[in-house]
Image (cartoon, rainbow, N blue to C red; front, side, top):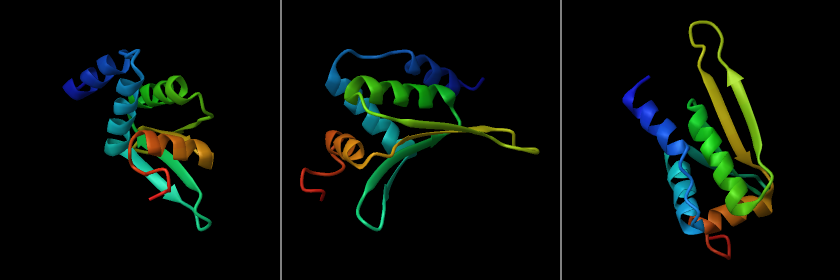
Length: 112
């Protein structure tokens, strides 16, 4: 296991009780491996993609504890020589995605 994997695993087990710290961690994860999708009718979705299960688990836990929202999780196993797992954690409900984006200051109350 690499040094960075060990650090990510250790950090994934820490959970601050302070809501502002949880939101800061969500913002950091989104900035590293997040995507914001906007549909043609201006509906927002927030996703992360990661090969590190600990990061996916931490993001899922933070979203649940901070916002108590519905979250979709999928794990895809590679085939052939590339057998890496890819985890996707997504907030697909527009109103929930807007709450997350507003909390991490990526969008304001008007949607700008």
